Length: 401
Image (cartoon, rainbow, N blue to C red; front, side):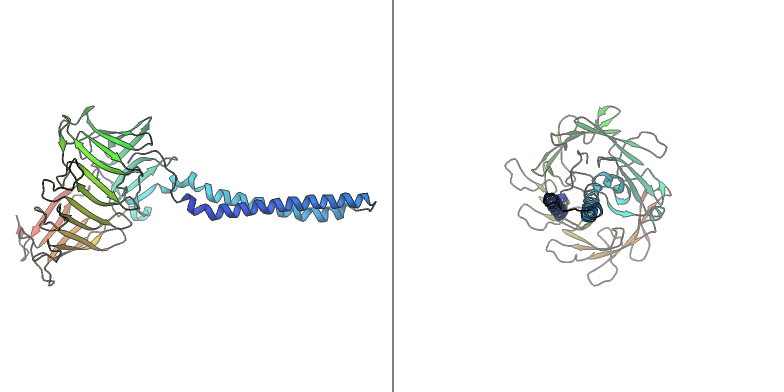
């Protein structure tokens, strides 16, 4: 999300040893200088004793010192470039094709993940992410099977950010280069920044007006690390809109990489309470690429809760491929055991990494059905990348309408 550029937090740790080495070179240079002065004094004493010293002899003494000092300066210059050049070129190197264009849930900076080559990008669905020389996101473009597509996770081909004093704007374009609305029906977003350069208010506009329906704006608070600590969503009339979990005020906790550990519902006194769906906390676990590998629902007493819509209390994703796609999903009940009917699913993918199908199995590895009588689902997309829905089949491979 929009922020002012931040220095790499590992900068000091990674360069401490190099800085010490540079300091040692400086000390060696000082010693060489003192040695040179000592030679000068020696020459002076020789002259006082009326001894003759030839010019070649003087050069023979001075030249090695000059060469050594010159080499020391070369080494120092190379090390200075090694340390500081990455901070000049980092943004250009960071721009490229990625599976995920931003996995930083704390919204302190934009962090794409799973980079792929230009050749892979001709086949694999991906985003081209572009940063300016201040390490600020300026553009995200979505490609479906190597072709520009309007069906990204933000609902357009391109996302464009522009930076102003105190705020950032975000607009969207389709594959024809026309400005369009995003998946939230907003033509433009404005992020208003705090004194540290991090957004604390986000506004959604449609044709110059706050969205009349849905989420018009959001307010967040940030912790001492400037990570988002709480968030409240509002309508254009100022009414609170709960999140998808039924939480009115969402409280967040993150790991060291800015990935969410939990979303939690609390009252005005800071007490954990159940939201409108009957649970209070959603626990997450992500891998280093920001891909889900576990999610569970807990009530206000910290006990597993069977989600009323998903018919599960805990879910695990396993066996990821190189593009971050899992081939197995495991479902657990409110006791934490494999689900009585649908214990796990096996997922298949197309070459471009869209999900092709999922087939369900019970805890004994036999084919089974979910709560709607579906044994297998096939996921359908058109040639432009638009998701067309699922085709469902029962245990005998008959279509389920």
